[in-house]
Length: 231
View 1 (cartoon, rainbow, N blue to C red):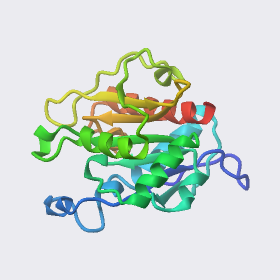
View 2: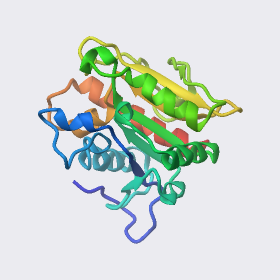
View 3: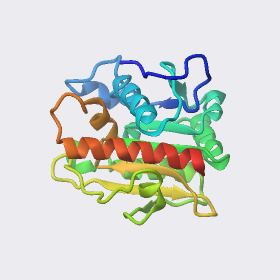
């Protein structure tokens, strides 16, 4: 359902912007996915609506029913939003303009949340972390993805996350958290690998996922937003 605001008529303080980007064709052969649901689109709009509604209710950040958008990676519109959500980066086949914009967005101080991707052993496809790493290296040759642990400030920016252990959504492959920072150590990209935080948001009120993990996914998402807005 749409986000609820107590401040009707005011501009939102935050907009959840989801990236639309070029994806490889093989996704269309998955039996449960259809041409109107490409990888970048997964869990839209339910997860986006759910997060912004809870962001307002739990933090007081002002949102409106229009506080989520889809923006194309090759469009200058991405530079309007300090936070971008990237679903299924393992399926990316970015063109030169998309790579250029991704690098410029991060260099300007934007924050990217990469979500819903997994090890090659699960789908018998490419190693999806390496797909993300490949495009980030082309966009930002001087930056590196590094494994994050619980001591990182992003896990304590609003809620104090006490563990990064979650039920593995992709077989027995344990979730991992990876990040990319600028030269000052400020995190600018977080990657939820072997994990699907957006899926936990989408199904939070449906009871088909462990409540503790769904709750942790909401807290993680809110922490990412608050970190991005305050750094």
